[in-house]
Image 1 (cartoon, one colour):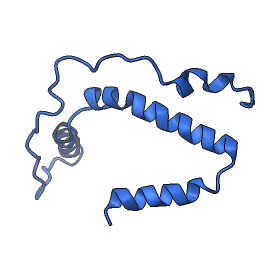
Image 2 (cartoon, rainbow, N blue to C red):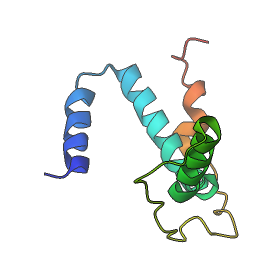
Image 3 (spheres, rainbow, N blue to C red):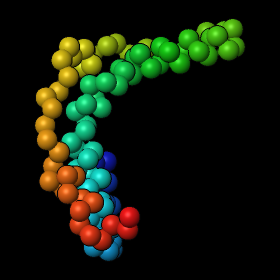
Amino acid sequence: MSRLSRLQALVDSRRSKLTSHEKQLFEFTSAIADWLGPFHDHIRPSPATVLADAMKQSELKTGKPLRNIEIPAEDGSNDQKEPPQVTPPPGIVATFFNGGWWPL
């Protein structure tokens, strides 16, 4: 069983124990994550960039370069020139706080 399928089974088993308000909040947060995911993937630095920066900062602090760490090759996934297409928010995101149950 893959990690993703185990995580999904865990989420499903715990989700059955949630109240209706908690389920709505879970669906809201999942919809936001799915909606904003492409933008997050577009603007975050590549793992190689993050690791190179961490190695540089470590060397500045300690005065010694890190050993036995290889920076992975760039896969080009973050080399997109144009951001993802802007889409309107999902219905649950746009109307979540209009439901009347949210305690504001």
